[in-house]
Length: 119
Image (cartoon, rainbow, N blue to C red; front, side, top):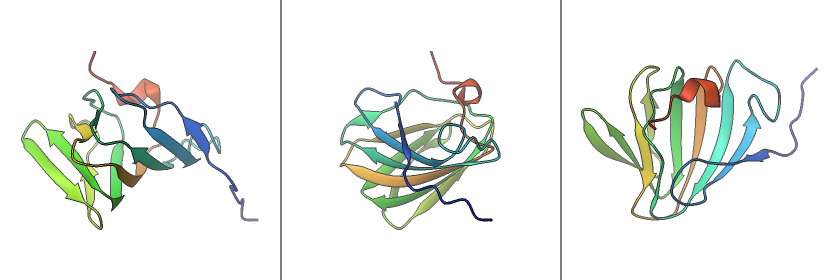
């Protein structure tokens, strides 16, 4: 039988400014380790520490601009665009230009133990 998840769990975000993470599917809201699905509401000027996660992240920008910095450079991902970041690749996300809303799917599910943030 399908399991309906009626509300997300709000999770504390890393970064210099408060960012709202609403986890619909994942380790916190549904006890799912196979993947996580979350909607992010990020303020203008937000930046998180760099990370080298043990999961692949699929990100769809719904509104605004998400800056994705890698060791090869940085790219602005705009509303209606998506980006895939491979497991083991160093990446840093930020929203320097405007408030941004996006959806992230992590495979396997996001975990503080496997994100490997820069110290």
